[in-house]
Length: 155
Ligand SMILES: CC(C)(COP(=O)(O)OP(=O)(O)OC[C@H]1O[C@@H](n2cnc3c(N)ncnc32)[C@H](O)[C@@H]1OP(=O)(O)O)[C@@H](O)C(=O)NCCC(=O)NCCS
Image 1: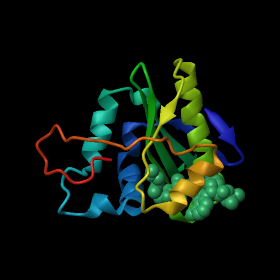
Image 2: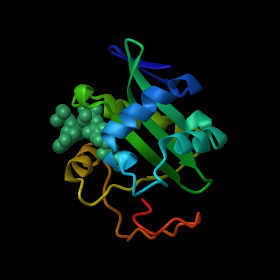
Image 3: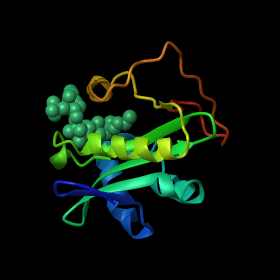
Image 4: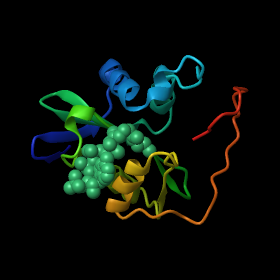
């Protein structure tokens, strides 16, 4: 467990599910959008528990879940998803700690580079990642749904 001030970071536990879903529904409005049923937080959690669950982390403060991050390593690149900090706990370095924790877990697996996607409308999230040393790659992000759902954003 990585502990900095009063925040602790540990692996997700199934008992965290409802707290994490609530946090995500506040941090990611698309999780409340009935026109996007493929954005199902319970399914996202179930899928992650089936694939590298040891790379799914939560930040807690006084046992309350205040942040999440998911990472994955496919043998070539690492990816980071679902970084979220409770609105009442932002700008206290918790997002930074979560990213650093996920980076260390990827490095420990031999991962040489981590990629992530940020919606282009989210300038404040781009500012957050730039503050942590991330830079835009000269690529366009392509995606294709494989589950038959209507194509919207695949990010
Ligand atoms: C992005 C997010 C995780 C950042 O978490 P956080 O705990 O507030 O981040 P930190 O406190 O570690 O911020 C570190 C630095 O990033 C930058 N930063 C963070 N939030 C910022 C904002 N809204 N605007 C501009 N810069 C910001 C600042 O440089 C900050 O340092 P400072 O507070 O000393 O100025 C949080 O805002 C969040 O959950 N957003 C909603 C969910 C989301 O969009 N997630 C990203 C998915 S790709």
